[in-house]
Length: 238
Image (cartoon, rainbow, N blue to C red; front, side, top):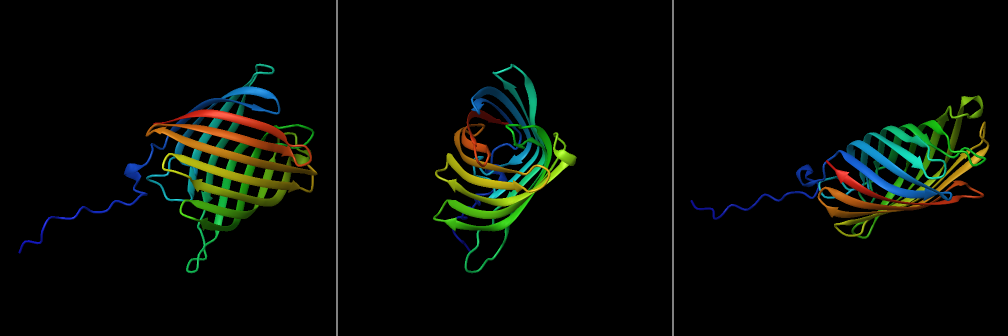
């Protein structure tokens, strides 16, 4: 018999067909410790927590094969800023029924503070484990204990191992505005004898399905004397 008009099949918010393209090119300008710079970045895949959310799982970040180059205004030199093989963040909010752990992992080469105002390119293997909780409708707060292995870059004996807390908030403020807050401390008790800190406020504003504007404000470096930074970039998804 007649069953009436067919009802449309509901499409989930994380349907990949509704998401941004996974490749991304970024270009922008910034300043760190009073030195202005221009930077260009390229990411082969896939999605970070600040990218436009539709089409992707909430609280999941997977970046594969990304690199960045920076040109300093102070001495007009250009250098590799980072080359990351992979960056993963999995935020699994806990509740009465689900007691999942959240975690992060990354591997590659990055510029890290190592003391005496130095910021060399070092091998960087990083991981962390912790908890996350949903706050309201669009925000996830998390806390983790992270550990880092740095290699080369002029580090005494060639490596340093550090550990410390990592706190943050990932907030989908609106459909076009994502915000991230993070604070991270890594203490290297041997070889470097140094404590590195990062305080960051990141915001991403979606301009179109293919473009976003991203703003970062930061304090980072030596825990006793962190330096300020700011960066504005245009992101193009393709």
